[in-house]
Length: 94
Image (tube, rainbow, N blue to C red):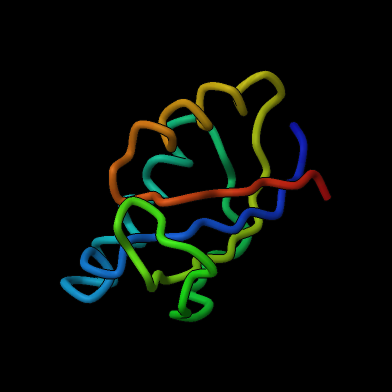
């Protein structure tokens, strides 16, 4: 189908503390919108950041493994860049 990725997304704590299920659903729905098949998605940890990001000193890490069709990663990255609740993200091909 496509490439398998390991992803780490750093989320704004305000969103996570308000409703974790909604925060998770927002991210997984975004991935599915671009044709991803999610193998695992879980909350990893809340940690202090090494430096402030968008005014945040702490954030929640979200770890996931997913399969994405070829050519869709740039569209997904663009969507995450525009999402105000996503502080940073990193996807690595497995």
